[in-house]
Image (cartoon, rainbow over all chains, first blue to last red; front, side, top):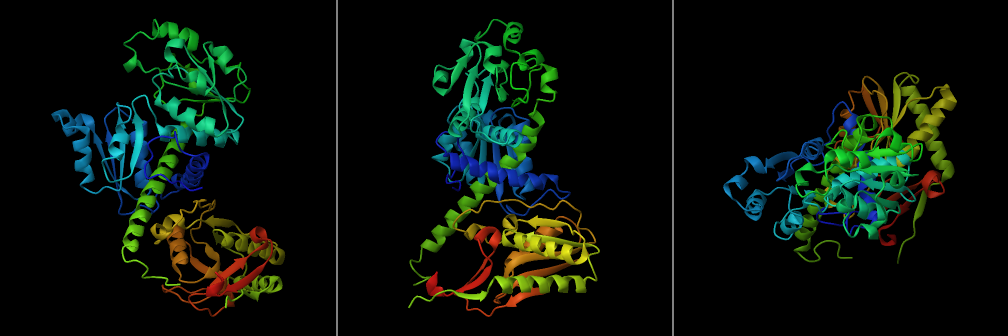
Length: 324
Length: 182
């Protein structure tokens, strides 16, 4: 049924119905971005604050556009120009922002669990925009919407997730949701980039061609160069020789396969340019759908918080209305 | 002492009301030139589709039909106990300088129509907006009135009016449900 949570911290633990409700809502929001006047008054007078402790182009812009298309006021704080550089702790920063009464706080942080930590301590809905190697729920939701839109369904699909699964929060969020919604998962990558629990998620492949053979959907992951100091593979060159998705490799998949990538793309490392820009790529659809998904998430969370506070207000004088 | 619901329009009554509204729309607008129908989700959409069919039967012209979902424009969204699933607006034609017939099942407080007007204006500047409803049950809270009414139905505030249409409810009828029967 409807989305029940107060926060969106991850997709793990959500029900299939809740995930579907968010995607359905997002689908109906797509039309707003096609209008001449790309704005609805739904969140007028609400304030959305985002706190980015890690670099981001797509996600941050996407959240900002989503908030503005719903008429919310939006403020972004990037850690690089915030008091974090003066040594303020995450909790102090969040408490100070919360004291300004925002209606929703979006956070990206390199530490897994940072949004959960704040959710217990700050009195406003929190959206996880990526926490360490843990979860990136809105990315997975937009992937699900894109797949459902292109293929028509999610259950029964063979989905290959390829690349740096170990460090990928995108992969973790997708794994939870796709398994719940009935997709068959393949985890493809070198042994060093696969977490031990991968074999409990689906079939593990160390050979790219075998991993994508007959796949309906391929989700490529970015090689996280910033986390590659520890020699998970000998060199980028060698990695791309074995795990770069090229047109020739793509021929192993279903003829109408779609290829997703969360961006930013390392061209020629995990994906060849002609695949990234080719007819099977739905990368730009993902970006478009990202705005709709974030609109849906903000709408559902801010609305739910408001309903809860109205209920509290009306609950105070007991049984004044509707004596029966 | 639980009251039972009372049928105020049966299938034939619904049919006649829509036939009359169709003729009134065509008469008032002198045909179908510039005419577009926009239904308010959910039953307004079914009714708009029926009006479109009737217009096609009479005039041999298919007038464009659109759908408005007013959820994002409501003034009481936060009071709803349950989040409705937003199903989206779908207007694939320009409404600038058109004669827009806004269609809904029941006119009550006028708040739905207010929201629909706000939504509509986001899509352009119609020449006129006219309102067609199957039932006007009174109790307006805003200065809004209908141009075409299937049935004027005086009601008490604690009564409710249910419009059932074969498309989604299996049969056509309008019933008045007394307070105790709810």
